Amino acid sequence: MIPEIRAWFNSHFSNEKYLQLVQYLEHWYNMPIAFRIAESPFFIPPILKERLLDACEEISSFILDPEFKNHTKEALLNAEIVVPGEDEHTIFLQMDFAVCLDENGEAFPQLIEIQGFPSVYFFQWMVGQAYRKVYNIPENLTSYFKDISTEQYSEMLRNAIVGEEDPRHVVLLEIEPEKQTTYIDMLSTSRELNIPCICVTKVIKSGKKLYYSDSNGEKIEIRKIYNRVIFDELQSRKDLKLQFSFSEELDVEWVGHPNWFYRISKYCLPLLKSRCVPNTFFLKDLDTWPKDLQNYVLKPLYSFAGSGVVIDLNPEVLDAITDPENYILQRKVEYAAVIKSPDDKVKCEIRMLMLWPKGAEKPEILNNLVRMSKGKMVGVKYNKDKTWVGGSVGFFEK
Image 1 (cartoon, rainbow, N blue to C red):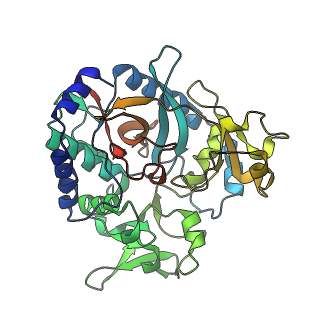
Image 2: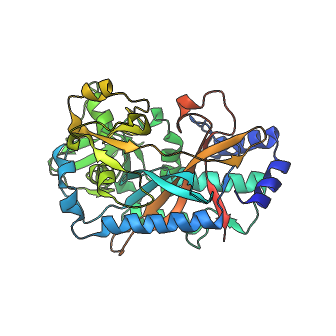
């Protein structure tokens, strides 16, 4: 979208360089990547950058409201698991925006989702460096919204996750992490922060304390948990045998308390009123369905990675829902095909990766994640056998 940069990139692009990009990333930790990396970064024009920053600030003001917890208390009433010891604010925050066009044909962000749960912060640290290295991205372009280096970015995450604690007592917790699609991010987090990546089934409980066994068989106390466990996956895995319960009082500090997954989620969307937020309703609050139902999308409140989303709606689908309190109806937005590839144009969505360290007044935007698509939706099943689609990162002029 920065025309001269896009023209430069496309004129120098080759499939050989793309293969180098993927190999560079996979050789980093000698680990195959289980999702598709897009051939190109997204070059963010100044007007879109400013609009993204403005949108994030406007939406953050709702989260900063002293009454935010009161506004979102019902989110925990329907939560599958409520975890004790909730902190004052989330540590991690992301906002997903579709890149659309305004009435003047200029790029304009539309909020699709919001999350108070960790994302792939370390993989985006990797992929930004990989694009820069393989494609010789100009030095005046950056993916960081603060004036920081890659080393400073990593250090900020270290301070938020590990802090003053001995890394041996900090764990990244997930369900069978090696089997997760985003394991490369967990591996990077583990290596760079020198913390173990632990499956929930490997956690040992004694009294209110949790432990894990290291590679030497030594029992190590867990004092901090960087939580990556999604509770709907945990609830569906009846085969898992845990020695502890998330809902009991434990002597651990949650880095990214699990309750924020519910509070800062699609639950917030009907509560937000802004030009950058499509009209959204709690399904339970609607007495009749919109007449233009084809212009809406149905979303479960707490699904992850697009699970359960219905984009082709009819009244029968809505009438069949027995738990409307767990769904929202969101007006569709028209993604703009703004990225010029060698054969056709590509749509994209940008996730603003934010961090809110303890003691800080408000969250700050650090980095971003871009997902490129040629399909009906941004997602793997809508982009099979297509090129110039998948995960990427946005660069903009400093």
